[in-house]
Length: 77
Image 1: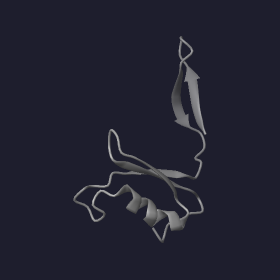
Image 2: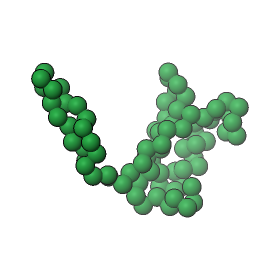
Image 3: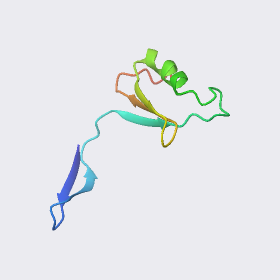
Image 4: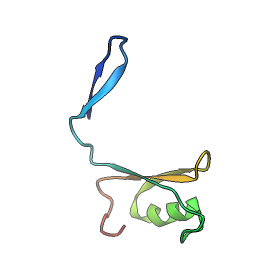
């Protein structure tokens, strides 16, 4: 949970983190010269059995976002 306050125009601005949610989002950019040859699906296939949610995009940058919950087996990753 975060705290935000409105400015004079009513636009909300971040102030501070009030309570952490226990989830982690990790962004991975698979490199063409890396062990998976830039394959987004390869990253998804590695983390899916661990219960990690993920989504990928190819434009404007080749990237995968991993949504790691509190119950994910961190020692296995």
